[in-house]
Image 1 (cartoon, rainbow, N blue to C red):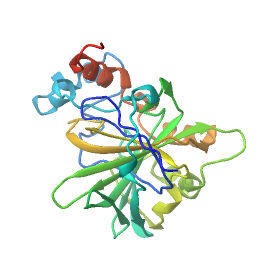
Image 2 (image 1 turned 180 degrees about the vertical axis):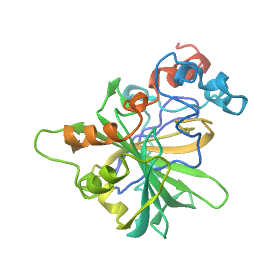
Image 3 (image 1 turned 90 degrees about the vertical axis):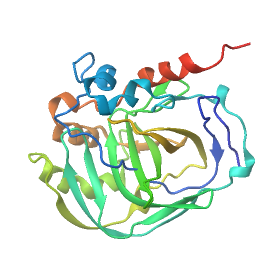
Image 4 (image 1 turned 60 degrees about the vertical axis):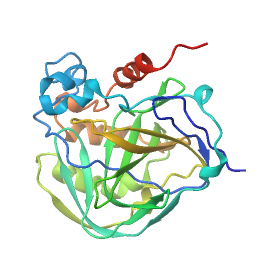
Length: 272
Protein backbone atom coordinates (compact mmCIF):
# COMPACT_ATOMS: atom_id res chain seq x y z
CA UNK A 1 0.00 0.00 0.00
CA UNK A 2 1.35 3.44 -0.91
CA UNK A 3 1.96 5.82 1.99
CA UNK A 4 2.54 9.54 1.98
CA UNK A 5 2.44 12.14 4.64
CA UNK A 6 2.17 15.88 4.40
CA UNK A 7 4.36 17.63 6.99
CA UNK A 8 2.94 20.59 8.87
CA UNK A 9 5.93 22.88 8.20
CA UNK A 10 5.89 26.11 6.16
CA UNK A 11 4.85 24.61 2.84
CA UNK A 12 4.55 21.06 4.14
CA UNK A 13 6.38 17.80 3.72
CA UNK A 14 5.21 14.45 2.56
CA UNK A 15 5.88 10.96 3.83
CA UNK A 16 5.21 8.60 0.99
CA UNK A 17 5.46 4.85 0.58
CA UNK A 18 6.97 3.72 -2.68
CA UNK A 19 9.89 2.12 -4.45
CA UNK A 20 12.34 4.75 -5.64
CA UNK A 21 15.72 5.47 -7.14
CA UNK A 22 16.94 8.91 -6.22
CA UNK A 23 19.80 11.35 -6.36
CA UNK A 24 20.59 14.90 -5.38
CA UNK A 25 22.99 17.73 -5.92
CA UNK A 26 22.94 21.47 -5.61
CA UNK A 27 23.17 24.30 -8.13
CA UNK A 28 25.85 26.96 -7.92
CA UNK A 29 26.60 27.93 -4.33
CA UNK A 30 29.23 29.86 -2.44
CA UNK A 31 32.83 28.65 -2.55
CA UNK A 32 34.43 26.73 0.28
CA UNK A 33 36.57 29.68 1.32
CA UNK A 34 33.52 31.90 1.66
CA UNK A 35 31.66 29.93 4.32
CA UNK A 36 32.38 27.33 6.94
CA UNK A 37 30.50 24.85 9.11
CA UNK A 38 32.36 25.89 12.28
CA UNK A 39 29.76 26.84 14.94
CA UNK A 40 29.72 30.55 15.85
CA UNK A 41 32.44 31.42 13.34
CA UNK A 42 31.91 34.80 11.60
CA UNK A 43 31.05 32.90 8.41
CA UNK A 44 29.58 29.87 10.20
CA UNK A 45 26.04 28.48 9.81
CA UNK A 46 24.47 30.80 12.39
CA UNK A 47 25.89 33.84 10.58
CA UNK A 48 25.50 32.91 6.91
CA UNK A 49 22.50 35.23 6.60
CA UNK A 50 24.41 38.30 7.80
CA UNK A 51 27.87 37.53 6.42
CA UNK A 52 26.92 38.62 2.89
CA UNK A 53 23.90 40.61 1.66
CA UNK A 54 23.27 38.04 -1.08
CA UNK A 55 23.02 35.33 1.58
CA UNK A 56 20.27 37.10 3.51
CA UNK A 57 17.78 34.34 2.75
CA UNK A 58 19.80 32.00 4.99
CA UNK A 59 18.38 33.83 8.00
CA UNK A 60 15.38 35.72 6.61
CA UNK A 61 13.91 32.88 4.56
CA UNK A 62 10.62 31.28 5.56
CA UNK A 63 11.23 27.82 4.08
CA UNK A 64 14.81 26.98 5.06
CA UNK A 65 16.32 23.48 5.00
CA UNK A 66 17.18 21.09 6.52
CA UNK A 67 14.36 20.26 8.93
CA UNK A 68 13.37 17.49 11.30
CA UNK A 69 11.04 15.08 9.52
CA UNK A 70 8.57 13.99 12.15
CA UNK A 71 5.97 11.29 11.62
CA UNK A 72 3.83 13.00 14.26
CA UNK A 73 3.55 16.07 12.02
CA UNK A 74 3.01 14.14 8.79
CA UNK A 75 -0.25 13.72 6.91
CA UNK A 76 -1.04 10.82 4.58
CA UNK A 77 -1.28 11.91 0.94
CA UNK A 78 -2.05 8.89 -1.22
CA UNK A 79 -2.41 10.91 -4.42
CA UNK A 80 1.33 11.50 -4.70
CA UNK A 81 1.94 7.93 -5.80
CA UNK A 82 5.32 6.49 -6.71
CA UNK A 83 8.26 8.66 -7.69
CA UNK A 84 8.59 8.96 -11.45
CA UNK A 85 12.29 8.80 -12.27
CA UNK A 86 14.48 7.54 -15.08
CA UNK A 87 18.26 7.49 -14.59
CA UNK A 88 21.02 6.27 -16.90
CA UNK A 89 24.83 6.03 -16.80
CA UNK A 90 26.52 9.24 -17.94
CA UNK A 91 30.00 10.70 -18.20
CA UNK A 92 30.90 12.56 -15.03
CA UNK A 93 33.64 14.40 -13.19
CA UNK A 94 34.45 14.55 -9.49
CA UNK A 95 35.51 17.70 -7.66
CA UNK A 96 36.68 18.55 -4.17
CA UNK A 97 35.18 21.95 -3.37
CA UNK A 98 36.73 22.02 0.09
CA UNK A 99 33.34 21.81 1.74
CA UNK A 100 32.13 18.66 -0.01
CA UNK A 101 32.95 16.00 -2.61
CA UNK A 102 30.74 16.38 -5.66
CA UNK A 103 30.03 14.26 -8.74
CA UNK A 104 28.96 16.39 -11.71
CA UNK A 105 27.20 14.72 -14.64
CA UNK A 106 28.42 15.96 -18.01
CA UNK A 107 26.00 13.89 -20.07
CA UNK A 108 22.32 13.01 -19.79
CA UNK A 109 22.02 11.15 -16.48
CA UNK A 110 18.24 10.99 -16.62
CA UNK A 111 15.60 12.86 -14.70
CA UNK A 112 12.91 12.97 -12.06
CA UNK A 113 9.33 13.99 -12.87
CA UNK A 114 7.23 15.82 -10.27
CA UNK A 115 3.75 17.15 -11.01
CA UNK A 116 4.40 17.00 -14.75
CA UNK A 117 7.72 18.87 -14.56
CA UNK A 118 10.88 17.06 -15.67
CA UNK A 119 13.92 17.75 -13.47
CA UNK A 120 17.21 16.61 -15.11
CA UNK A 121 19.79 15.14 -12.72
CA UNK A 122 22.85 17.41 -12.61
CA UNK A 123 25.03 16.40 -9.65
CA UNK A 124 25.28 14.63 -6.33
CA UNK A 125 27.30 15.20 -3.17
CA UNK A 126 27.66 14.02 0.42
CA UNK A 127 27.12 15.50 3.88
CA UNK A 128 28.52 13.93 7.05
CA UNK A 129 26.59 13.68 9.29
CA UNK A 130 23.13 13.89 7.74
CA UNK A 131 21.50 17.29 7.42
CA UNK A 132 17.92 16.10 7.76
CA UNK A 133 16.81 14.29 10.89
CA UNK A 134 13.89 11.90 11.39
CA UNK A 135 11.98 12.23 14.65
CA UNK A 136 14.98 14.08 16.03
CA UNK A 137 17.54 11.45 15.03
CA UNK A 138 20.56 12.49 12.98
CA UNK A 139 22.23 9.84 10.80
CA UNK A 140 25.88 9.36 9.83
CA UNK A 141 25.70 10.50 6.21
CA UNK A 142 23.33 11.93 3.63
CA UNK A 143 23.73 12.02 -0.14
CA UNK A 144 21.95 14.72 -2.13
CA UNK A 145 20.99 14.20 -5.75
CA UNK A 146 20.20 17.56 -7.30
CA UNK A 147 17.92 18.00 -10.28
CA UNK A 148 17.62 21.34 -12.10
CA UNK A 149 15.37 22.35 -14.99
CA UNK A 150 16.43 24.78 -17.76
CA UNK A 151 14.27 27.33 -15.89
CA UNK A 152 16.35 26.73 -12.73
CA UNK A 153 13.62 24.93 -10.82
CA UNK A 154 15.29 22.64 -8.30
CA UNK A 155 14.35 19.24 -6.87
CA UNK A 156 16.70 17.45 -4.47
CA UNK A 157 16.51 13.88 -3.20
CA UNK A 158 18.21 12.98 0.06
CA UNK A 159 19.22 9.43 1.06
CA UNK A 160 20.28 8.75 4.66
CA UNK A 161 23.02 6.37 5.82
CA UNK A 162 23.97 4.65 9.05
CA UNK A 163 27.41 3.21 9.85
CA UNK A 164 27.49 -0.56 9.40
CA UNK A 165 30.39 -2.76 10.48
CA UNK A 166 30.00 -5.18 7.58
CA UNK A 167 28.29 -3.61 4.58
CA UNK A 168 29.79 -0.64 2.69
CA UNK A 169 27.95 1.73 0.41
CA UNK A 170 28.64 0.13 -2.98
CA UNK A 171 28.20 3.37 -4.90
CA UNK A 172 30.86 5.10 -2.78
CA UNK A 173 33.05 1.99 -3.06
CA UNK A 174 33.36 2.49 -6.82
CA UNK A 175 34.34 6.13 -6.34
CA UNK A 176 36.89 5.67 -3.54
CA UNK A 177 39.99 5.78 -5.83
CA UNK A 178 38.78 9.06 -7.32
CA UNK A 179 38.04 10.58 -3.91
CA UNK A 180 41.61 9.72 -2.91
CA UNK A 181 42.85 11.36 -6.13
CA UNK A 182 41.09 14.69 -5.45
CA UNK A 183 41.87 14.78 -1.72
CA UNK A 184 44.86 17.05 -2.28
CA UNK A 185 43.12 19.30 -4.84
CA UNK A 186 40.54 22.07 -4.65
CA UNK A 187 38.04 23.06 -7.32
CA UNK A 188 39.66 20.92 -10.03
CA UNK A 189 37.35 18.57 -11.92
CA UNK A 190 38.70 15.07 -12.54
CA UNK A 191 37.03 13.00 -15.30
CA UNK A 192 35.86 9.65 -13.92
CA UNK A 193 34.13 8.08 -16.90
CA UNK A 194 30.62 6.66 -16.79
CA UNK A 195 28.75 6.89 -13.48
CA UNK A 196 25.39 5.19 -12.97
CA UNK A 197 23.18 7.24 -10.60
CA UNK A 198 20.96 4.18 -10.18
CA UNK A 199 23.71 2.85 -7.90
CA UNK A 200 22.88 5.66 -5.47
CA UNK A 201 19.19 4.77 -5.52
CA UNK A 202 17.03 4.68 -2.44
CA UNK A 203 15.98 1.08 -1.73
CA UNK A 204 13.09 1.89 0.61
CA UNK A 205 9.43 2.49 -0.17
CA UNK A 206 8.68 5.50 2.03
CA UNK A 207 9.68 9.13 1.62
CA UNK A 208 9.04 12.60 2.99
CA UNK A 209 8.23 15.52 0.68
CA UNK A 210 8.38 19.21 1.54
CA UNK A 211 9.23 22.60 0.06
CA UNK A 212 12.49 24.04 1.37
CA UNK A 213 15.80 25.58 0.35
CA UNK A 214 19.40 24.87 -0.56
CA UNK A 215 21.34 23.95 2.58
CA UNK A 216 24.39 26.05 1.64
CA UNK A 217 24.63 29.79 0.87
CA UNK A 218 22.81 31.50 -0.72
CA UNK A 219 20.11 29.18 0.77
CA UNK A 220 17.79 29.74 -2.19
CA UNK A 221 14.20 28.71 -1.43
CA UNK A 222 11.60 27.01 -3.62
CA UNK A 223 13.48 23.68 -3.63
CA UNK A 224 11.32 20.54 -3.71
CA UNK A 225 12.81 18.06 -1.23
CA UNK A 226 12.29 14.30 -1.20
CA UNK A 227 13.97 12.46 1.67
CA UNK A 228 13.88 8.66 1.82
CA UNK A 229 12.91 7.17 5.15
CA UNK A 230 14.77 3.87 4.74
CA UNK A 231 18.39 4.16 5.85
CA UNK A 232 21.22 2.62 3.83
CA UNK A 233 24.51 1.18 5.19
CA UNK A 234 27.91 2.84 4.96
CA UNK A 235 31.22 1.90 6.52
CA UNK A 236 33.04 4.21 8.90
CA UNK A 237 36.13 4.10 6.66
CA UNK A 238 34.06 5.55 3.81
CA UNK A 239 32.90 8.46 5.94
CA UNK A 240 36.49 8.98 7.09
CA UNK A 241 37.58 9.14 3.45
CA UNK A 242 35.04 11.85 2.61
CA UNK A 243 35.84 13.86 5.73
CA UNK A 244 39.59 13.54 5.25
CA UNK A 245 39.41 14.90 1.71
CA UNK A 246 37.70 18.22 2.45
CA UNK A 247 38.99 21.20 4.44
CA UNK A 248 39.48 20.44 8.16
CA UNK A 249 36.80 22.95 9.19
CA UNK A 250 34.28 21.18 6.96
CA UNK A 251 34.68 17.58 8.07
CA UNK A 252 31.25 17.89 9.69
CA UNK A 253 29.64 19.54 6.68
CA UNK A 254 25.99 19.49 7.74
CA UNK A 255 23.98 22.66 8.23
CA UNK A 256 22.44 22.35 11.70
CA UNK A 257 18.79 21.42 11.33
CA UNK A 258 18.10 23.34 14.52
CA UNK A 259 18.95 26.70 12.94
CA UNK A 260 16.62 26.27 9.99
CA UNK A 261 14.01 24.45 12.06
CA UNK A 262 13.91 27.24 14.62
CA UNK A 263 13.09 29.72 11.88
CA UNK A 264 10.23 27.53 10.73
CA UNK A 265 8.86 27.04 14.23
CA UNK A 266 8.90 30.79 14.87
CA UNK A 267 6.59 31.24 11.90
CA UNK A 268 4.20 28.38 12.70
CA UNK A 269 0.86 29.27 14.33
CA UNK A 270 0.57 28.38 18.04
CA UNK A 271 -0.52 24.82 18.76
CA UNK A 272 -4.18 24.58 19.87
